[in-house]
Image (cartoon, rainbow, N blue to C red; front, side, top):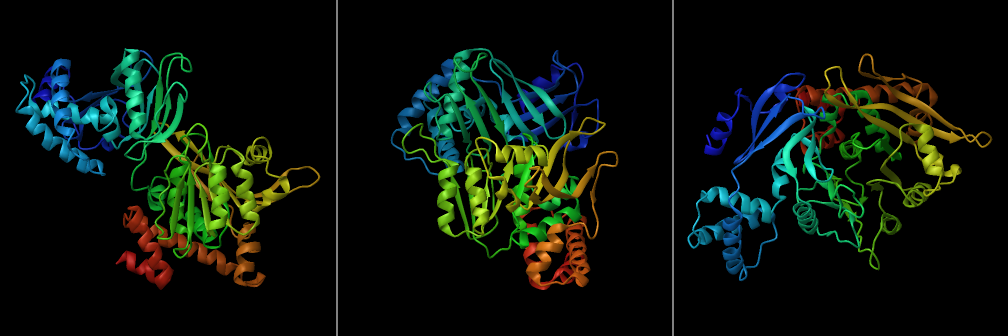
Length: 513
């Protein structure tokens, strides 16, 4: 056990329980545990409420060397590094940096153990500095620095927490914001104090720089994303969606239906959109358009485009990318988030036969239509029936206080009444909060299955039951994947491809054996 960890444990009144993963604490109201995040980084979590009602998240890492030692190492490293060309990959940069530090340590007198100095030097110069332990912890969803003071997180298992990391000096906080923004290749400045960007690990970050726009000092919010997205089977296993709903989305995307994944901030919209892209047929061309890269598509014919904000000439917005995408002859266009006039172009794309999927901020059908038809999106109401499906998702807390995400409704949009301007829609899936279950409206209730899919496939009214039977078969296949714990995103994609090749029944037998 590391010396610094032993010293920390001896300083406690009550020894914490050592655990492999915080998942074992799920549902516990009282806990005092410690787990390892990465080499030389541990986390102590306690259900001891702070003054503002948060449970505590304490980062345990090697003690920081003195400023004189760090400056001496930095000066010696700069003299050596001036002759080196850094590699492209961050992993290779770290290897090179550590090998160069070995030579530096032979020239600089240190009182702190070398491995501790190397840890802090690499953490600060290459990664996210004092926030790096939080970024390394895969159990964290959100990281917030609201200004001077403590750093807050949202833990996947333990919910909102306050960390032991704190910023008390404005200069230190500003330096961190500037450093992180430069590593994201979208640097903040007094002229451009608000920036949306992505960190090297793929996490989405929003920077706000300077006291003139943020009264408590510079602030940032990091939304963490895994390099491998959550799969549809993981969403089923966690209860976010049901197997039948997933099968329904699979059938709809097979037929090129347009889908909006809607909900409030942090409701899991992008996660769901990522998961259902595995249902898009593999031989289609997909174009993704985003402000910050978050979408991952398993298809080989995938064009990924990202906006560019230069603050003036040379700025490329979602609107520009979406217009360009229409000339690239895609089968599916995926938009990271529609919030401006690019929404109008998206509906024009639907009009011309392109399939569109996007995330959108709205809580129900009525607010969806109001936002789409109002300023600044201004989609004509006569166009709105081109959107086939609106999926609404939200974040909830169960009786034990555990965070959970649920799809609360899936609506099929049919038309807009020209007289009343009311949207005509069918809720095919609804959420029952009492039983925590997603209910299907039943056979004979899906307008899209009976009036769109059936027409495309040439199925007459007497044989509509075959489509509902196919829906059940797809659901059974997905359930078999969940039962066998096939959760990796790309493994799920491979099994869906197999089901397309050999048929559902044969694929189910293959999964079960």
